[in-house]
Image (cartoon, rainbow, N blue to C red; front, side, top):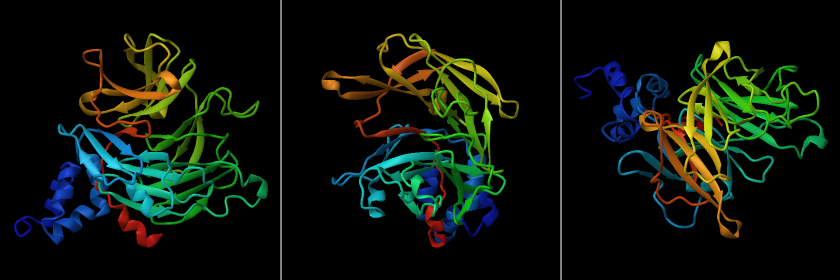
Length: 362
């Protein structure tokens, strides 16, 4: 086919195909492989392909031989092993720091100066990024926890990692480049914790009401980092005690769990205006009253994935997953296979981007 179709035409066709098909087509010829591995195709694919999110299951590293990647029979879920990370570090425990456009960012657990690992689970490729050094030239800060976030700058078609040190220091890493300190006075307005949610070109952290010190400007608000402008700011939230933030197919959303009977999901439809709209109300009939329920995101057919955590006997926790269909207003338990307490589940948009292309720059 490459003898009859110009490269530009092949590029346009590939940008509209599912990632699973593209990875198979890499074997057709060296030309096809080069086109599919071109970072420009990944960026165009993100804009043109109508592929829906999959449910991604991330199994922790194990000594048992397991398939690195497996698709569900109906194509609804993607199951991947984190064994690949053990080839880069002498550890079997990793902390998910964030995810964006098909890439995931990990660090080693219980290691303050851990390198970062950027993973494309579908391609089973990983690139190691050294942490910024030094974080700050004061020994008394050496014990503070580092927080990272992964985002995408659409103006330059580049991925960036922002590293935060407890509201004191912030640095930015551009994939394939190096770490740079944020200009003094442009750091985060308060300390943030946990993984951020990437949406609308920015990373977002929800600062709980009890967080920070008295008088902290960020208390009870949302801290954001504009990935393109590399600037921090604050967003006001609706007037209720929020549970968590979530990415709903590119839109920033916040979850209200103030009622035991239902979950309300507010979506920021017009990000520039910073206006919230109550988009979903999910009834919890049949769900145990004391169970913790977390909205994970949108997946195929517009269904919302929910994580249900409850206590078993002997104080052992158990995770179940449900799908909510907004069209029928119905909840159903999932058929996600082989879940255990350590398996992480995400709503995932795959990407053909090869992170191995950036190893030479590390």
